[in-house]
Image (tube, rainbow, N blue to C red; front, side, top):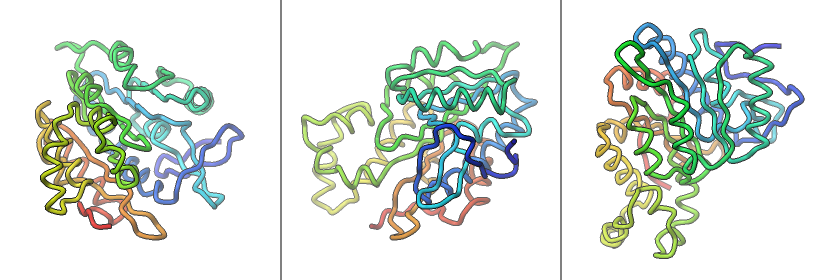
Amino acid sequence: MSFNQNSIEAFDDGLYIPEVGPWAENKYEVLHHYNYMFSTGMKNRFHNRVYIDLFSSAGIARIRNSNKYVLTSSLIALNLPDPYNYYIYCDIDEKCISTLSERVQRYFPAKKANYIVGDCNEKATKILSLLPKPSKSNTVLTFCVVDPFNLGINFRTMKALSKYRMDFLILLSWMDTSRNEFRYVEYDNNRVDNFLGDAVWREKWAKLKNENYDFRKFLAEEFVSRMMILGYPDTAFKTMFEIRSTSKNLSLYHLAFFSKSKRGYDFWNKARFGGPSQTSLRFED
């Protein structure tokens, strides 16, 4: 069996398949739109196009409480008319990486893929070592997907990767943030410290909290401001794509896209408007 390149639809292939909420389908549709345009649009502009997935999972997921299967980010990036030249996959779950490797070998045996087991924040050096070395005669453009279940990406990891020509699509998890705000603001908790790359945010947040400012919006603004230090424009904040729960319509997370190229944002805007209609940056409960 094979996958339809114009769809994220998948099937039960007998290998390990984790479950995801029904709202994840929305996210994967947008990822499919973007990858399709990016990989084709850049194929004649760079010698090498590289795809990195820092939380790659197993490649196929089942929509919870259904018999529906979808490709997840790692296989979406392979199932393209003009696939990337190289793939780098990382996941802390050895079972996910092992299953993904088996699927790639089964369905995309000719693709050049590398697999890393471990926390991506501890494996940044290894990831960078696998990138083709850029030069005038070997131009390289990388698209990196960061799709954790929580605020699991450290800013120092983003800083290390951004030294190369790299666009990012990052999931900002508000479900995790809302549930754990009371823990994250404690001085002995370093989750947000790692996410933003410093501990000075608490002073600013203490003032804004008294003004009933939204903690999720605050973190989004702070993260974008730090990415701007790395050379990325504030366009990311203006073009975030919201994912809401299908039953209670709660704001679960935003997809934030970062590129130093106008063309990158052209692709992203077409992807987010070409997908489902939840496109505005909203922070209500």
